[in-house]
Image (tube, rainbow over all chains, first blue to last red; front, top):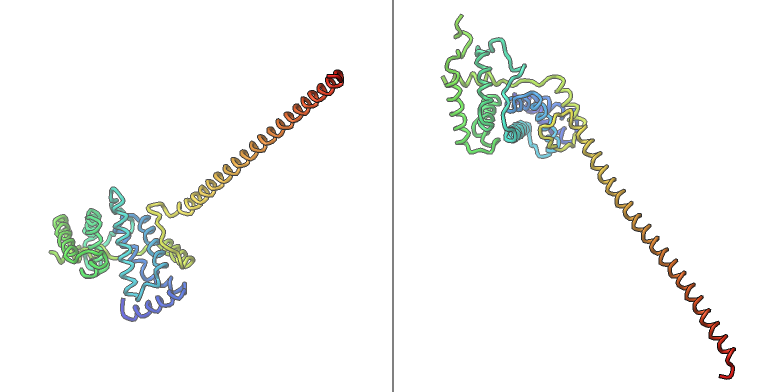
Amino acid sequence: MNDAGFDVLDEYLAKARSGERAALASLVRAHQRSVYSLALRMLGTRDLAEDLTQDVFMQLNGNLSTIESNRHLGFWLRQVTTNRAIDQLRRRSRVQLTSLDEEQELFCAEDGTDPLLQRHLRALLSDLSPQARAVLLLRYQEDLDPMDIARALDMPINTVKSHLKRSLETMREKTGGIPMRCEDQPT
Amino acid sequence: MNQDIESGMRSALRPVAPSDEFSRKLLARVAADPQARPKSYGLMPRSARPLAWWLATSLAACLVLAVGIERHLEQQRLQQSGLEARREVLQALRVTSQKLNLAFEAVKSQSTSLADEKPGL
């Protein structure tokens, strides 16, 4: 999001804090994609992801006065979403595997990455521990740096780096036979 | 190779949008309830939440009502039995008093007639 976008959203935040519902709706619209995607890939099913997304935004309603800026809001939403998802996963005996219609991609991505590889990577992600999954999602979906991930998950930075290193190694091993790019596939 | 995996991850983990229907509901809910606090519904399906809330509230109200009615009836029963006992005691006292009066009158009349029959003694 560019600076102008942030300025507008900061204005919306100020208006939302003073009770303007349309401004709050704009903030929800701006952040729902990120919150929903995190919830979906942490929990693995659309129903659970929708429930968590709704709960997080309802929690935001009660905490608007503590949010200082749109940047802070983005951080707060990611932090609450991942931590609540980790709590839910700890309570569940078995993690459900991702099997989502919207996750199926039948065409090559714009960057040329093989769709089969993408599906495989998402499946591997669901095999990781909740903490490792959260670290990868915050790094590669939300593009946070390790320091911000450590703050969001209340985790030492070395643990974050260790999760990233180990998870990437595991993924590299398990995707050994799959071509990385569409043009690498045999015709 | 690591860079390939990293770019693969970025590509695989592009954010996805929720369904339009969910977005509409979410916006409506947030806009309608601006001061809502987080609720811990756990893993209960969202559609079951209002029903569960009403069931829990109704059950609690029924319990309070039942306990209240039971206590009221118990108190009434105690009051009734107390009044009944009081009535019986009063009745017994009345009967005893009447018997004693009769006995007293009988003794008194016998003493008077004996005194009349033996004036010289």
